[in-house]
Length: 293
Length: 292
Picture 1: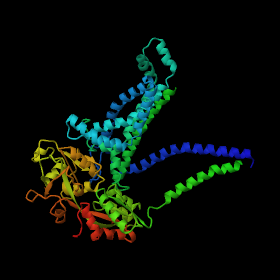
Picture 2: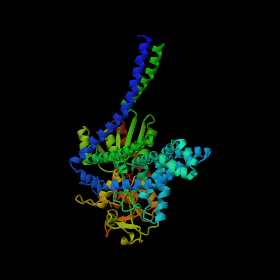
Picture 3: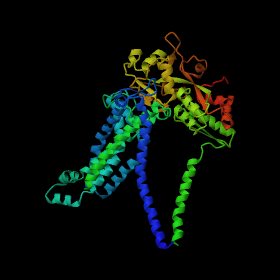
């Protein structure tokens, strides 16, 4: 073999190896989805899809079992919406401050601090939520227990914040300098420039940031399991305990008999979660692509 | 020259692949090690037995982990542990699953456990009947004043459904041994992931009521005296009362093996049931199966 041909062969091999790595991640997602479908669908031989999605009671280990996940879906939605209501305004405002206003050293300090927040393990945040936030919320609202949807929302808002701030900050920094210069040349104040020009130009990136933050919240398990009380009932207010989809899977998988109806029901919950996060990521992706154009 | 470098890049890859594949095929079972897994209630007890056993047999390593009774039996069947600790008996489905895999699981009672019902120390109540307990935990009674306490909503705490304690409490307290009963935990009962989480919530919530194994009782919670019915005496959850069966909520703690115990597994079980092993049971605040 001549050195030249050898080099070509080597290049070909490396190229294919990289291609393979790229294709593999897609294949893995497909395989995971197929696995979920295969394990989850056996539930619907004995149970209708409507009863599963809209059933109001979740008593998986009773005889006969009842697999209605409406309380769990409501629980997940309530906690997620609450977390979004807290983390989105604060996160976007923080991103604007860091990208536009903060002076050099403060900016670096804030960025490092927010990234550090992302590095705290979720159990630790859950533990803090359970020990300090729970009793505080209980006393503040004078309710029977501090383990509520609101406690979960506040805890999760902390976890969504780093994602929202860092992606939104990137989007704001990516707004071309000329926009700002043009605005100031037109006589706009700093605030007018930031709010009406920069924030508007970065809006698609901010929407993507919010969506990814929400995706993080809805998939979070450990912290939520520790602070929301996990009562499987349809909540009528944010000050009541809720049970989320993720916490249900985590808490019950260990007990379910492999191949049984309960096991299948937990996988079916997995399908529901997968579809929800897929939709959220899809929307985020749509906006990210739009911002690049 | 080029050839040599090529080999330089490929060899580490192959080595890494071999190491990864080799790691996967390694079995959990080694001649001198014992894996024990299951009930969270029994983790401390299992740990204490393991430590004492390893002192007697220094070349043996025994590892004990929790996760819940269901987790234990699942790992036993999938051969990732050698002994499963269970705080309830095997379910029919689990037995069927074991038979399908050609196994004949043996259930050995290694200790007894009384379940304490606990409230905040400031709660004026100190005793309840089994019927009142069933009413509280199934949500028929929602305020302490209905059963003679303060005017405060009851916050019902339960363990998660993967807990043997949850299943036992439902079948024996909520349903009172009645096989046809459909009683369930109240829908608004808080499902907490561990006994410690129940203790923590009771500590700081004057309206809370929860249950856990007697070993967890501490001065920051108040254990209630329980009566079988209104005519019977109220009994405190103590070791003497569980042994004499006067205390109504107690259950056997089991160790389950894949088949007839042999080798190291049999040695360990012999140690657990020996007077020395049963003394450890008392030390960890459970109740021995045999009189010592």
